[in-house]
Image (cartoon, rainbow, N blue to C red):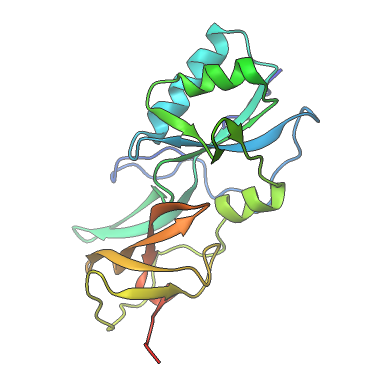
Amino acid sequence: MREKGTTMAAEEQNPEEQNPQGEPSEQLAPPVNENFKWYIIHAYSGFERKVRESLESRITAFGLQNRIGRIMIPTEPVTELRNGKKYTIERVFLPGYVLVEMDLDNDLWHVIKNTPRVTGFLGTGDNPVALSEQEVSSILFRTETAGNKPSMKVKYEKGEQVRINEGPFANFTGAVDDINEDKQTLKVMVSIFGRSTPVEIEFSKVDKVVDE
């Protein structure tokens, strides 16, 4: 049976909302069921929270409370300065990804797959791939936030190749898709688990790829 706090994903909050939960622990708590494994659900980008809410409703409707544990959305706290005030928000840094801890079988697969705004599982065909706890931790937890960083003077161009130099995506390379000068961040398209995924990252955490 799912304990209080098992749905631990941080909310995608409005910019005005501060994070009431505080920063997450840097280590995953052990599963309440030894048969639980972590899987990645692909969702429509921007609808991660709606997918989580739909999953929670379906869990109750189908009586699956003993089959599904935590449902988490990869987010990180960032500090934004607007109108002279600082706001701490939780930003989704892997759009379209929802992590679900469950004891998966064929019936549960169909329940998840038929959830509104869910496009499938990480894996090939009808064979979802389970993640290790280390992989889940590397996705969910970040050691630094984007707040209070000095402004970077490096200029980037759309389509330019960059390499991420720290964090869970260190050594990933990708093309710059969008540039936010005010927030000092880039949206970089990288290949994660074989899927092209936009990753929002600070200027300070990327290097330009220089042709030899």
